[in-house]
Length: 184
Image (cartoon, rainbow, N blue to C red):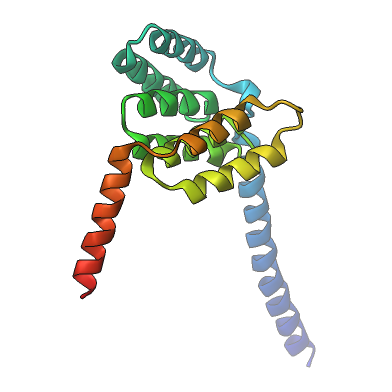
């Protein structure tokens, strides 16, 4: 009887020990991963220097050089949210609003409340003809913007009022016509 009790007790200890070890390993892994992430103010200085170079190149009109430099800044430190926004701006100016939207969303993945990224995404959405989604971004900006005069909200409001370029409207109606034809 005593041997049977000891055996059961040993089985219970082994059962709970394996669960406790698994829980401890999970806790250590999660805390290490969270501790290893950098805050925005700890962005690699080399990435910040490349960001400044890329923004300067964009101001002089060298969009190709700016894009290359900003992409390098992101390779150096992929948590550089400002580099994603700047690269999105450059990409949008180069006439690639779809790619710009992806870049702004990368910035928004790092900080969903980045007003500049929301403005850029909204403008790129307008360029693609997605006015309703741009209006949703405008609502978010207005909710987040604590200032009485919010330049990001004003810029996106102006872009929405201006509407998409004629090429976006033409391609949107073309796509809708193709969808209607293929549905028949």
